[in-house]
Image (cartoon, rainbow, N blue to C red; front, top):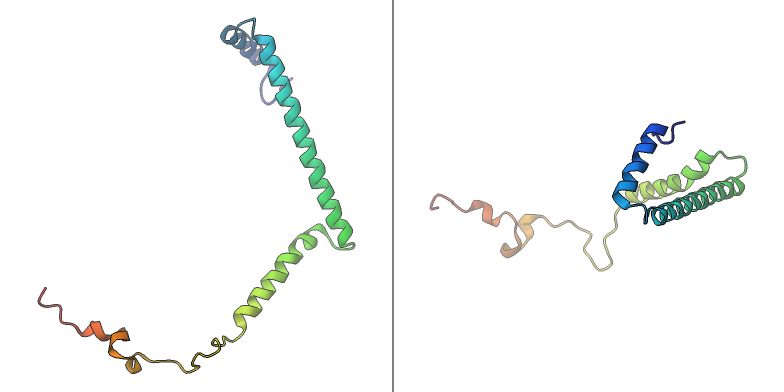
Length: 124
């Protein structure tokens, strides 16, 4: 009988160590709290399993004839198609903005990006 890879001999050793560390007067309280924690974990696990099963059944009921994979991937495919459509659409400038591109040569000197490139750095 192995429970989580722990055999009967290992279980007896753990119980003896727990008895020595905790003491015989607090061992029943420890066992009770461990039992309560195990019940709570089992209840949460069953609740989660029930919730997942209900969601899977709802998805199957919404799209009869489709497999679960298609029902789960359909929203993602729709979003992907919308993003691709938005990316492929031509960009339009905001209202009031000039539609002609501005080259660096036509900018005033204080806005030109290439103005400082011609500075001689030999003095440094």
